[in-house]
Length: 285
Ligand SMILES: NC(=O)c1ccc[n+]([C@@H]2O[C@H](COP(=O)([O-])OP(=O)(O)OC[C@H]3O[C@@H](n4cnc5c(N)ncnc54)[C@H](OP(=O)(O)O)[C@@H]3O)[C@@H](O)[C@H]2O)c1
Image (cartoon, rainbow, N blue to C red; front, side, top):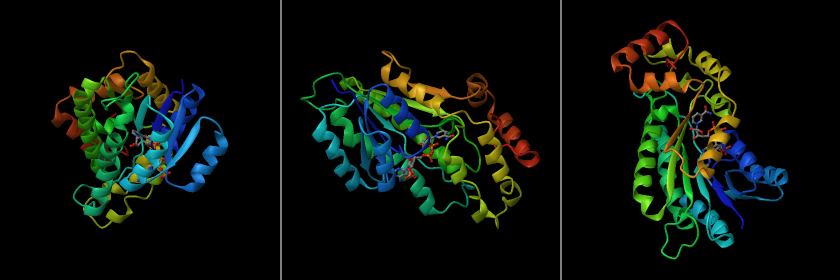
């Protein structure tokens, strides 16, 4: 029987590598892209076992239209991977209303819209037959830990963590498992997209710190993990009989958990302030 997976944002990074691994494991991948050119090049790379879905996650009409392709070709999907995302940087005080809203819409609200669209194929339907599917939300360690000047992104991922728990508890009646993956820095285009992103805030009181932003991004990216690390965890979420509800993907998960959960807030505040004023790291882990 054909095994099917829907992944949002397969044009690059974590989504693209998940497509590579899951396709290799024999799943038929319905992968979302925004550009025709990406659909074409991926179809050339994967002539069999891949169907491109073209939509912007912010556009429900386009999502519904693309979802029809999946509904018309299969009775169920094994998993939905909500991966598409962006990172809107800047001081919380200065980020525009429009950018704040865009961050929430892409990283959070769209996850609910897309999940609700595909729920009948995952098992939330009265006449559903077969094993229920799984929902995997690509969150971030920023969903567990708040770094300054990355705050809008952190807020969106914290809310995504919450959405993951709510869906898991509500969808339990259908047997649908819902998980979050929380990667630390992973080598993808997301870092390059944010180089020079602090320029609009040059006239603000934060300029002394923000001047170091490019250096901070480059330093973090240098130490980032390869994208294959997230793909391995995604596969585990899909195949393990009893998967955990959340998986951190980090160079040093143990230290991260201690800093995020056990150190007193005021100590972490002090550490971040000190490292931002003196060095070029934007978070202690
Ligand atoms: N890289 C990291 O260090 C890291 C760490 C933790 C969590 N994450 C999360 O991992 C996910 C993937 O990020 P990535 O690192 O792989 O970055 P990426 O290489 O920039 O990939 C982002 C993907 O999302 C798609 N996308 C963005 N906005 C979209 C929209 N409005 N509609 C549809 N698709 C959209 C992009 O499509 P286009 O090519 O069309 O823009 C691209 O396919 C994100 O949710 C991110 O928050 C990343």
